[in-house]
Amino acid sequence: MEKILELLAVVISAYIIGSIPTGYIIVKAFTGQDIRTIGSGSTGATNVKRVMGKKWFFITLLLDAFKGALPVLAAMFAKSFTGIGLLPVLAAVAVILGHSKSIFLKFTGGKSVASGVGTILALNWQVGLIIAAVWAVITFFTRYVSVGSIIALALSPFIMWAFKAPVAYICYCALGALYIIWLHRSNIQRLIKGEENKVR
Figure 1 (cartoon, helix red, strand yellow):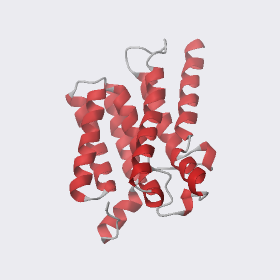
Figure 2: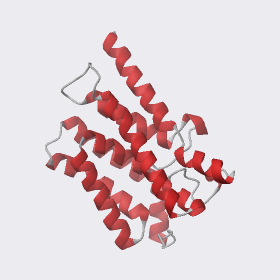
Figure 3: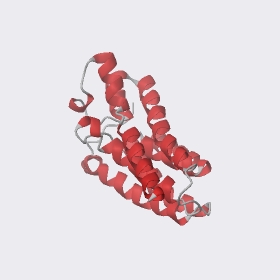
């Protein structure tokens, strides 16, 4: 019973932390606007950039990554289910679900890229840094944030496997990548049509 309670506490707290709508709060506080009515309707860093510029893009990015990493790091200190990486992975899943389906925004949110990379940084910092670097390079050369996000996350389970991480971490990266790519389905449609916005 104690283990189950600890598991529930980890998952619920991770979901609530993931649900904190960083981009929404920043835009609302400084402009009074609801970011969900602007651009893509996402609360993520890319949409924040459309409203408030590059500086706030990076601030939102870092805050979302921190929001992703914090619950996972906390779960690593839990006493239950040690050795197989179950609790950190459940915390990571809860975080990205919280970010994309925030309880504070009637289950709307962002595409969980920054928070997802934050969870991976917490699970394995080397893998997280590589994924962040891949995202940055691909985004720089293609000028599409969505392309950088999709490719970087798609590579994440293979990079995690190359670092001989626990199977639970590899499975999380695979499932998380599929989920985040699914959240980008409208971006993929715009890319096919040549209508996706480029980074200026």
